[in-house]
Length: 265
Ligand SMILES: NC(=O)c1ccc[n+]([C@@H]2O[C@H](COP(=O)([O-])OP(=O)(O)OC[C@H]3O[C@@H](n4cnc5c(N)ncnc54)[C@H](O)[C@@H]3O)[C@@H](O)[C@H]2O)c1
Image 1 (tube, helix red, strand yellow):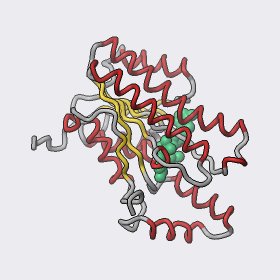
Image 2 (cartoon, helix red, strand yellow; image 1 turned 180 degrees about the vertical axis):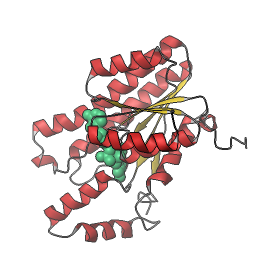
Image 3 (cartoon, rainbow, N blue to C red; image 1 turned 90 degrees about the vertical axis):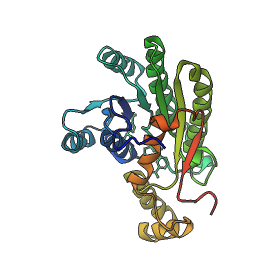
Image 4 (cartoon, rainbow, N blue to C red; image 1 turned 120 degrees about the horizontal axis):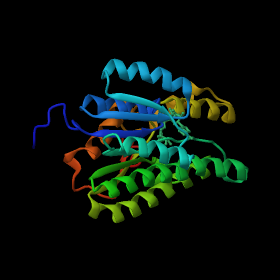
């Protein structure tokens, strides 16, 4: 095994959407620890402010935080132009997403469209805007989508969300097939139940629907996971570091499920 120390991503620049909190922020921190420069984009101004201080303290001068709505094609193209005229981007992580818990038959068209728009169309806009510029620059790269365990199986109250993540895996596999010959390797991470704001909101909302408490739901969830706990963010972020690094240079078109054994348990 090659010895890369703590510099698996030295000299690389990464762009991460939904990067101001949760999984995106944890990936930003993991990439910074491996020597990368990071541009983290998010729609939420307050989270961006909080993340700015945190990333600056971790890696002074190596992180930039930008406001971006991933459904805005023009804004994404303008940002990509700026980054590519200033050194380029090697690693792209389309990660921004929203979760709306509803049974399929209770999902109105506006909700369906909103979830598909942010989770799938937003990821398409991010991935293709940046990949097009990587191809034009003739530089190799990595694209690592954040799909979900619900991108490989459906689940209750998950129709729109699950459809968006299945769609993302189809997009990922097609881009992987098309871009590998250009040296751009495309894969995705499928997190199970990771301990973020999104999952805490899920417990709270489900608790109301089911007439129980968020704590009781959390315990029941944890009991179903073979390792017996929700996934800590730092234990998920390593999968992104691996897929972004030279260790994964023969890995193409894969969906890496990180779920503490949920799927097999
Ligand atoms: N937490 C989990 O257990 C889990 C499991 C599977 C998949 N995921 C996926 O991981 C990704 C990150 O989720 P998380 O758990 O960190 O959730 P989170 O809610 O903590 O973070 C999501 C981030 O995306 C941002 N965002 C939302 N809409 C946006 C938009 N239109 N443009 C730009 N940014 C936007 C939010 O502001 C937020 O900072 C999502 O795609 C989610 O579907 C999460």
